[in-house]
Length: 507
Image (tube, rainbow, N blue to C red; front, side):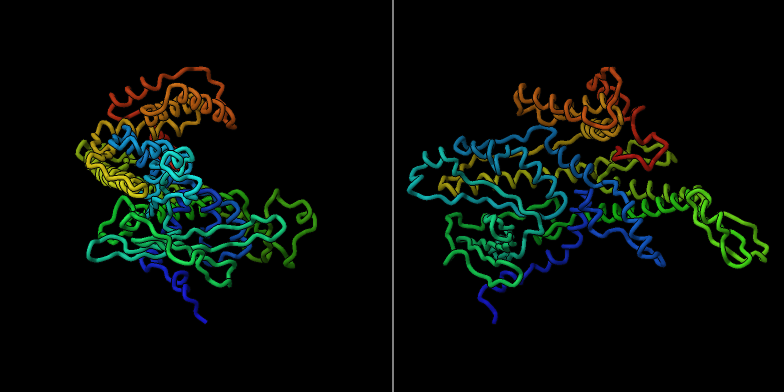
């Protein structure tokens, strides 16, 4: 029998459903590590045995090309501290907007993920007993303020846009969790979907895979917002359907291609190192002494001794990996081009000033769209939080993220962020990291907090396996100025490295 709430669990918005696989690829490409390796992106090539494929999967390594680019671009929005004109009554949002996070910390996370794909931001208020917090003073003392929550697209189930005003009529969000509150019972997955409307919200729940879907509350819990307190956000929505068109789709697909080609190249290296010995045999057998001792770690294949072929070693030549290196370098360059970070890896020509300007225009266009989205989103968060508290919305509420990016600013920042950290020199990594922290966060952190962060940087980088023994002190400010004066070129730029397969993100 069909239950009254089955449609809440069954339906998924067609645009969300269509993009689900691509968004999973984007997210796994960004997270990297085990998440990418276990997602099944390594392709078994024709005639490869299951045993060989299994071995190749254990050797496959994913070099994350997506995360550095996304983190760098979203971080550039905070190159200068966002300017905020907000009511003093809402200062709690500046220091505790989501799970004790400072607003800049939370918005950095939002910036990175909305660059990747469409996300939802919910502004909610905690439930409380009016008897324990009857006044606003009581709510302040108990920290019962509105807060924001970020939902990745995998937790957005369904929604409807009203054609008359272009706003959400309703949206269903996934708040599922694993319940193991009782140590004497087996844990179970609880699927909980929350329906938010313009007038309130209602939770629906199912325990186990085949459990009955029930409403957690008897009826909708009302709110006084006047609209759905959920915002769908992304850096780019070309057709205004609330679902993003992101360049990260292309970047993730190319990353998957690089992952597979690196595995093919690794297989060729292994085949070139551990060849097979073709050995002439009169009866199709192999001499016992050869089987016992072998030839190093190599396998042996017998062939008819009456043939005219001499004994030989069968396997790929190590020189055959050159096409793979060229292909992988080309793919890496294509990823950088998506965000205006293209460089002439092959040194076939010197990039002209006009060509560089076009690159920066592409990057600037991305950053401006991101800054505009972030400004509007943050203003909406303050507005919605005020409505939750029954406060009037002030007309002077204003949030503005950096959008005036000059070529000089971008070139200096990109060069510093992408060149200094990739070098295996601990002292340089430490000082570069400290400089970046000061550059990005120094505007709103107290000096003693910055000093504590610098101590953590020293402690964590000292734990690395490649601890530098160099005692030289590097003036990173002077290095940044030298890079800037040289027009972005640097003797330490990794693009000058002849081993292109080991490069990270370059300018």
